[in-house]
Amino acid sequence: MVSEGDELPNPSTVVRYVGLLQMEHYGDNVVGPLPTAFEGRATDDSLSVTWCEYFVGDPDHQLRCAIETIRSSMNVKPKACFCVARTDHLAAAGATLGRAPRAVYLPVPSNDAHAGIYDVMPADVLAISEGELRLLELLSGQAWSRFLTREMADALPLAQCEKSPDVK
Image (cartoon, rainbow, N blue to C red; front, side, top):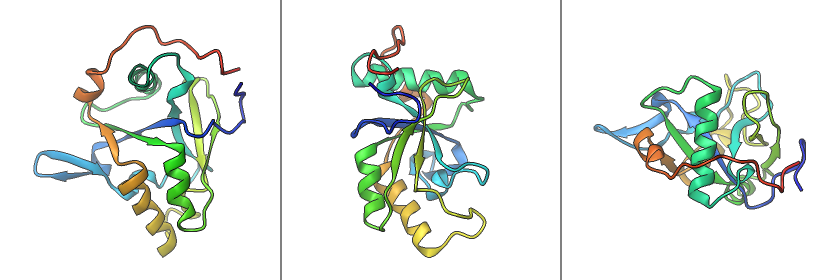
């Protein structure tokens, strides 16, 4: 049973909304997220994500429910993407640089499936160190390398999005 403030089970799947300008392009094609997509905001102490396993269903259904939750909680632009990562991949990327990323269940009024990823954001987004830049590059190239465009997300199956009985 996962309660507010608990670490997410490992592995878990998380999704992050990423604007078009934070995605790398090759011609008209989006090829993946840029490291800047995972800097976070200076006012936050964790990287904001939505936890897929909060929802009942198979992995594609859970992912679609997480995306729909993001869409209902913020102004999602039509050309933005949704980047997907597993918590064990985030931990492995961080460990290579002496970090210990962890995902914590932190529901907010507009997103009951909200979580925060700790120990991945730069200490100061205005003055990123070489090691922090390397971590952001690892995160974007390995841990967050899966992404969905609007069309890809809309192609996922959608049914009733229900909270898992494993979440308190």
